[in-house]
Length: 125
Image 1: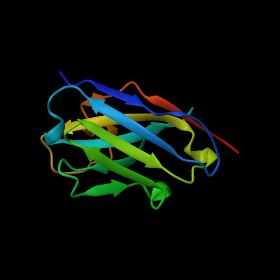
Image 2: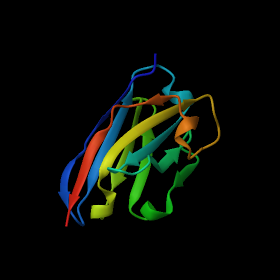
Image 3: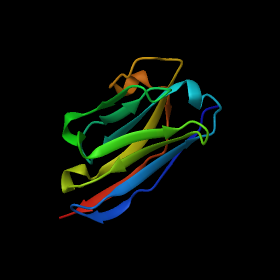
Image 4: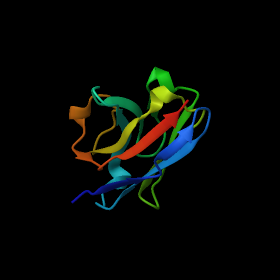
C-alpha cells in the first residue's frame, strides 16, 4: 500500500525559499514516476513538476522553470521540491503524487493513482 507523506511547507516572504519533501512508504518508489502538484483556493489542481524513476527525465510547468528543482533519493524513498525565488502566486497546497510502472511524465492529475495529504505553502508579499 503506497502511502505518501509531505513535509516542509510554511510561510515565507516573497523571494524566499522552501524545500518540500515527500516520503513514500509503499515499497514501489524506485519504479514510480513522482510528481508535485499544487492547488490554490478556488482553482483546479495544477501540475508543477515530475521526475522519472532514475532521475533521467524531469518536467516543469513554465511558471516555475528556473526557480523550482525536483529531485529524488531512491535510497530514502523521498522526492524533493526545492522552491526558490517564491512569489505570492506560488501560494497553494502542494501535493506529491506517484505513478507506478510508468516511463512517461504526465501532467494530468487523473494519471496518478497515489496522493499525499498536502502541505500548505504561503508566500507573503
